[in-house]
Length: 232
Ligand SMILES: *Cc1c(COP(=O)(O)O)cnc(C)c1O
Image: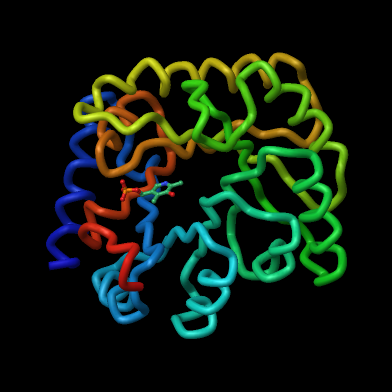
């Protein structure tokens, strides 16, 4: 089941790449395994998946201990400053940085744990939803400039969570907006800022996101099935 789902998602990503004239290798599929047990993650691993996304620091740290060490773990959920220490030496990318305070703590913990460089994305609340974390598009350039000055932290791009929609097409404008924002940030010519990663698109809209330039898509339900938050 997981193997078939993974193949189907990869097939759709390849098709979306082809439609938009991009090489398939441009897009990394992150299998979002939050709330899912280790045996399901292992099944996805056995089917070839190496990038996994979690939204809770302790859950990520526990799974890290139990699963193969060549997995690339992505922190995609809201991260409290007091939890940074659990994951800073375990993740390949933190997608959800939305404050200077958090970035400073990542920098401090990287120093403490002798991690040379922590790659991060700035999370942008692209549709201005009250319920979402992330900075406003207007705040993003200044925050990027402040973070870029910190040691041991490297800004690699932007992340957005688009609204939940029935038809992914409805989010196309938001994905376009995120890409434009990256151009605005690059125009400021700040050292130590790259804008090569666009983490956008989930189960309901990842094909549209790929068409609009996503380089990472985060797919949970489409691979592992529905999440049940009551019986974890
Ligand atoms: C849960 C989650 C996803 C995956 O959502 P699905 O709709 O199950 O694909 C992607 N990104 C973030 C930040 C999430 O928290």
